[in-house]
Image 1 (cartoon, rainbow, N blue to C red):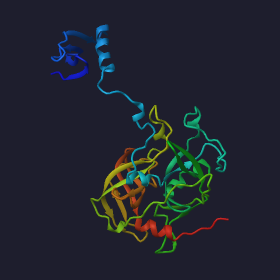
Image 2 (image 1 turned 90 degrees about the vertical axis):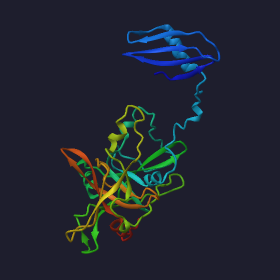
Image 3 (image 1 turned 180 degrees about the vertical axis):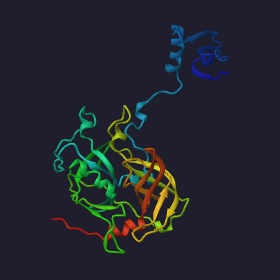
Image 4 (image 1 turned 135 degrees about the vertical axis):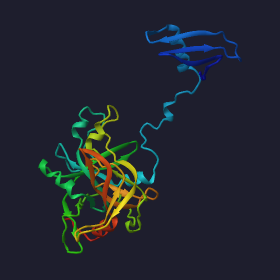
Length: 331
């Protein structure tokens, strides 16, 4: 079976597969009455006449290529999910000692041959929940300790088609204080980060807080989305091109189960049907329709060291009151 493809005035090229050989055959066009010739493209080589036939496809009038019509630097339209991801920051350590952010300091461009040497070592995700406050897991903070380095979050500024990434030191990490006991509850894998970033005209802090949803109204089977930084820095170095551009990844799933609190130190947990990979800890769970946040990812399941399509999340009914109950002052 052949499918004609209009290639140019008076010429139709048909692709024909016979056995293991691919043949290009030029057939008459009834309108222009051209003669018929055959060109063979075998596994042993390409004849010059075949190259001419292929050139008809490339230089014909099928669809002109206009590079100005391609959005080369676009990250897509502004969906509810995209807006949520703009409130998520990578959490980790830096391979250098950063200077205080100033407008006149030159950064390392993505086109620099040394750019990858300056990428953050990402251990988790942090959610901007209020001015100077971010949420993550306690395990993400503990993952920094073996490196004997200060943890940072990496904010960004959008400038035209580019982004400027600016690290901010985490001033303090507060473990969850359970209102039932007014004491730290280590069972709940939750930490509130204090990052008193100063926003100035020269270097504004443009990360906007998320919008809370009501997790008490969530039910089994409800569709949700999960976003964060799975695989950490490795994800942005996996492919041979487009390397080093740090951005969150979004998954789609459902609430597979809602696990009730069993022990006095437990909270309710959402069991969600998306894969959990290192770096997604501290990621956000949200309503795909409006972007309202319903929870935060805490842990995932692995079998034989392989991640399984199940993660657990603390619902917003726990997160939101804790964020509101913490205040801080800067000197």
